[in-house]
Length: 314
Length: 248
Image (cartoon, rainbow over all chains, first blue to last red; front, side, top):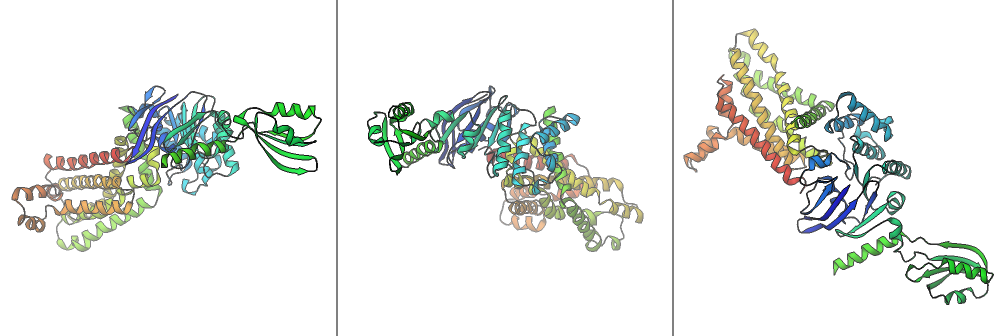
């Protein structure tokens, strides 16, 4: 497990990470979200033991990373941003080197390398020189490297950045497959990714944690959470609905004679769908379509991170 | 301890392979041998000198190394930093000290290989006359130590920057200083402006008296200690630079 408390990191006069704390247990896929320059990479680098925090501590399986990076790194597989690789090596040569560094020798080393090559679908390029690889294969080669020693903790800095949708899917499937037995922490600014694979999202803005919750719980903070889009035919529909105490705003999207398409925004995210449906039935309106909004992560993300920014600017 | 050696060996092997997986090794060795031959036979006039000693061969080594060793050493850290692989290397339980020792060993062994391939010069001398083989062995030892000192200096400048050209130029300047510090034209120049002890101090930094002693066949512990201390100092400085630049 990862346990970070009070992390602070300054670069010159700029504070890149400001009092960040979090905790992640086995089975968690934690997504670190934030605008560019928010401090995601700096935070991950401190967990990986590449950067030393100016204050605060990271414990990885109970080991203080800054105090004993060598021991802590044995529990960690880390994929840096932009997937740096030794360009002049072949894929298997590169993996053999890292397997050797990770303490494997001889037959065992070859077996580990073959295993990760298979697991990351690198078979077609295993003897190809890394500088000739496409971006997708580069990313997967760097990902494969994190699995060599079967660590408890995977730190992935923007693992799907720059990949096409098919390649993204491959990487996400691999992450999901491994999530049961590991702690996985990944940074991203792609919100769909968080919804797709993360069990928890930590949003960082201007170096501070501004939200830390499950993606579904975060979405509940959206204005649109529990909003209802309704398509009905009946007399005086908007007038009836306006009397509902829990509906804050009604927007007419389209009208066609007696048929209207409405967007109903609830007050404070209160559930209104049941009442609305009941009314539809009572009044014998003809129902064409009804949708309940789950809330949108990008709404929440934008709201949280931009208010932070303006506060910062003041 | 075992893990230390394991990591050093792994890094050294990777660096060694990196030389030979690219044309660098072959171009370097060919150019080195051609230049060594050119200086020995065309400039020092080995054949015309009529003496079966190899002074004309070894005396050029400091100059050859000054230009060529930085070319071998410049990518050691600069490339890691430019491409970001340093972040990989320092997050897989490898310490800066292990990594720099591995890289140093690989680059030094590579220079020793290039040096060893000059053996035909020795064979020529043996064929033509009877050189003192003890002196030749001592001179080779001196040349190998000299190469090691240059490699250590080149690695230091490589750690300073992510730009290989800057690393190369800085290493050449350090090399030039270490050659010229003991030359009479330079010491004479300094003697006019500085107290004698300072001139001696600067002059004692020079490679030349130490290398020349070994070239003459005198293996003095002080000369060996000199080369060892240059290497240790440069490696230590490299470690300080790495610890300051990486992870801060």
